[in-house]
Length: 317
Figure 1 (cartoon, one colour):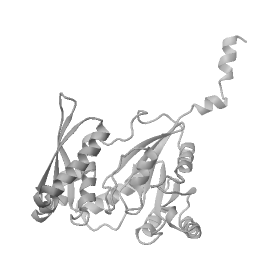
Figure 2 (figure 1 turned 120 degrees about the vertical axis):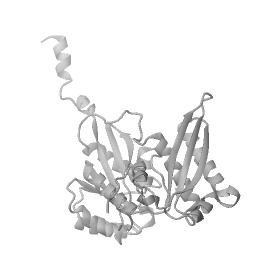
Figure 3 (figure 1 turned 30 degrees about the horizontal axis):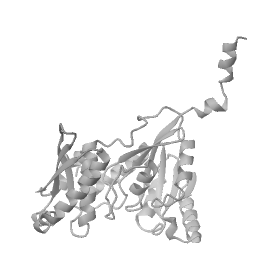
C-alpha cells in the first residue's frame, strides 16, 4: 500500500473527521406573550436581532436569529407570543407563530417560571399535542422562583406534553444557556449551513431599522400610546460622506395618538429619534441621519399592505 493510500485511509471514520461534520437546523421558540423569547434569542445569537419591550405582543412576525455553536449553525425563529386573538392583527400573529413551529426541526417552548402554566401557557401546551416535531421545554427566569416550584412546574408540563429535554435558564443573566446550546448543536440534523458564517439574521436592514424605532416608541410611550402603532422605513440613502439618511413613518390610527407620539413641543418624537439613531449608528457602524414622521392612517390594522410590510399573512374575514 502506498504512502498516499495510508494517509487517505487514516482519515476515514476517525474522530477528527467526525468532528468536522457540520450540523444545521431551525429551532422555533414559542410561548405566551412576554415569556422572554426575544431576550433569549438575542442572548443565544450574541447580538440584537429582535426588539424587546415590556409591552405585550411586541414581536409581530417571525424573526430569525442565526447562531454558530461548535460545528452547528442554529437558526432560531423568534415567533410572536401566542395568546387568545381578538383582532385581525392578533389572528395573523398567532397563525404566524404556529406556522413557524410546524416548519421547524425542533420546537422550544419557553415558559415564564414566575407565571407558570396559567392562562395562555396552558393553552399552548394543549396545542402542542398536535405538533409532531421533537420538543424541548425551557423554563425561564429561574432566578426568581424557588427550586421546588421549578421542579413541580417542569413535572406538570412534562406530564402534559412529551418533551425530549427540560432546561432551566435565565435569558437575562445567561444562566443555563450554554447547556441549552450544547444540546441543540448535538441534536440538529447533519448538513451544510444555511447562511454565511457572519450573518446573524435574515431580517432586511430597512425592516430591522423600523423595528428598532418601534422598540424605542414602545419604551418611551408604552403607557400612553395604544398597541395600534406601526413603523415603516420609507427612504434609505447611502451618502458620499459614509453616512446614511433614513426616513421613517410612524403610523397611528387617530389624531389623539399622533399628539401622543409627537409629545409636547415635539419632545417625545425627538427622544425616540435620538435613541433609535444612536442604536442604528452602532449596528451599522456609520453615522445615521434619522428623520421620523407621524401619520394618521385610520384602521391600518385592516390594511393588507401593512401586513405585507410586517411579514404577516392578511387574514380574510
